[in-house]
Length: 209
Image (cartoon, rainbow, N blue to C red; front, side, top):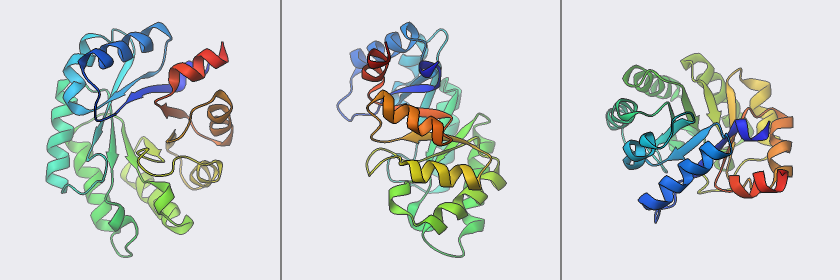
């Protein structure tokens, strides 16, 4: 069932409490996997999600904060009730050779701070295929649960990227960014994605109905 792999997402900078509550109610009504909200909304969303999972973001959207700050963010979000966390890795390091140990250390330290499923956001639109392959191998080595294609602030998921990640990683794949139709969502799943992150979940489900 398509709804069961969708993360109903609201990360708009103008989102308020009422919109978050509505998001949670929609997720519960349509049996989405969960909702994805900014860290400050975790306590509010937790109150309105009796069955759906609660996902939040760390180092979002640029990944520029240092590892210690991300660890604090992750620990705080986890303790507040987040079930999964989507972490933005430092894109400049993904594009810089010789940074494997730094990236591995960051992923492992955040995992220690928040022992829940972690997704690493790699911003595929900004990486070459070789850079994507490198982070796939590092994510597997670090034990990340998922690789996520995009924050949505740049070009989003493509079939090419999903297939490439699937070929080079055993982690789950969260296709995210620009997925607005049922056909797009289903094509991502067919290519190897295991989760869909979208701000258009209601439109997709209504189309599927």
